[in-house]
Image (cartoon, rainbow, N blue to C red; front, side):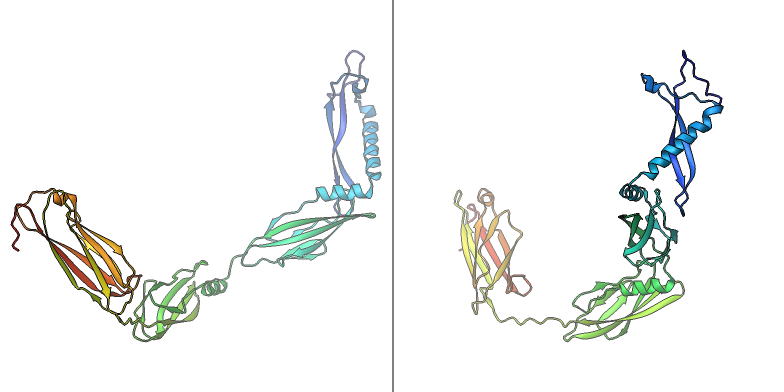
Length: 371
């Protein structure tokens, strides 16, 4: 304390002391330690003169400060005490082991604990007993702070970290997570590695219609449904579990075509006339008024256009026309242009009735038609 000197009229020492922290016994709430800090007040006025510190009066000053603090503490209302104790109350909110719960507040309030929700923590007096599971879990704890006639509550959300799974828990969890379709018409993927690190090995236990290879179930459909049992061995280290899955391979669909279409071919012959584009219409009809659906394949699109005018009808129509590019050419041959009309019974194009072949024989003006 050598920095403190006696106060002089021409050189006032404006250093003061203040209490900055109080430490209480956690079980009784009594003051066990007092922390005091010096500071200098340079404000103007008699009230800022400060207190000169000497060895003679140091005990008197500290005693006065303690008495003032104790007086303040003793004169707090019960409501003020529980409110302050609730504000200062804290606990760990991320835990993986048992931990202590405060039982006495800063102002001597009693604190009791209970579990509001969750099962991973049990309360035993002022001890939190942690029960870790195989996944993280959240527990809500409630503290009831009581002092005299005043009571306050405060909730804490505590996350209990998961423990390491045993080998048995790993294989059982991965086995439960396996998903296999109960029926199928197409090949499907099989899980070969569980989320908990287990390896999964597959084989066909019984039945035909499925072949297993490299994590794939390859399906072959027959004329009737077939039942297949798949076998999965889920293994982690030396622990394993075997599961069986029944899959029905649905029969192949057989579609009977009940309609026909006409005509089956189309041909026309055009002679070039400059400035006059030749065209022809084509109508395709079903034999029993069933709706037809057509798609056009035209590799000679630079010379002829083939446009579908009516589709999805018992009478579908299209127009074949000469392009302006062909009409402007000078030629000395008689080319034949070919297009194809694919005819379907269903609008999803799954049942094909056949293909109509269409031809256009073109006579350039410099060539005399055979007919």
